[in-house]
Length: 275
Ligand SMILES: C[S@@+](CC[C@H](N)C(=O)[O-])C[C@H]1O[C@@H](n2cnc3c(N)ncnc32)[C@H](O)[C@@H]1O
Image (cartoon, rainbow, N blue to C red):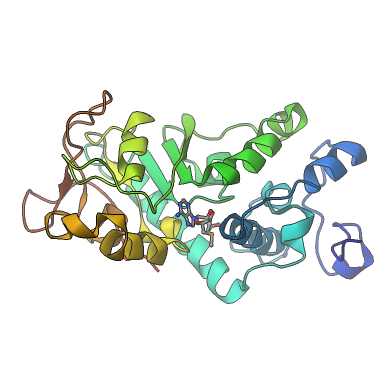
């Protein structure tokens, strides 16, 4: 029996009801809330969504993330991630994105890469006002098995239309090394194969990659790519002033180079330190 009773439950009496106006029937709502993930890493994403859901329900909220309740599900709502880190992290990431988007037209960010996107729903938050943005969500396939089952439900699509130009999910594993010839980890190649264009200004601000940055960093330095460590710079979200550059080879042959801060001029990205 779930401890989380939903927004109309007695335990939530101090909260407003973010479900008002969603138009979901109780049966659809219950079905969507009942999805479960089969991986502990992915479960942490549900915990994060639950924390954003609770913040969204506050009268003095810092942001509104209305689809977060469904993305958390019953299992996430029973174990929200600590709000002390999740709420400022989300709010800070929102600010990084908006500053990168609403800046000088030449360098304005039009791509957002969410490394370890989890149940992030920035693509569905119209108040961010980033309509031309192309969003790339990078995470485990198991994350997207559940996330897409929720977001692609017709009732959810009607209630929460996409608020950006496009949204692309990228199923990958940060632990997997890439091909020997270019030293790229799998996720970078998968990202390029999904249509990420290194020539278009992007915002991969650290806060949107948070929660998995240590995972990526540890795999990068101590994982299967160890033998190529000397040739491989850190991934872009972990290196201030660095980013993917050069053409992506969608046939899998050529390099999607990672520019080092000491080399080429600074890319038009809004990088911040990962936390
Ligand atoms: C703590 S959650 C953070 C989710 C999201 N950034 C947020 O703030 O809501 C960490 C995310 O990293 C993903 N992750 C962890 N290890 C991974 C790996 N080896 N490959 C792909 N994704 C991974 C998990 O699936 C999870 O969605």
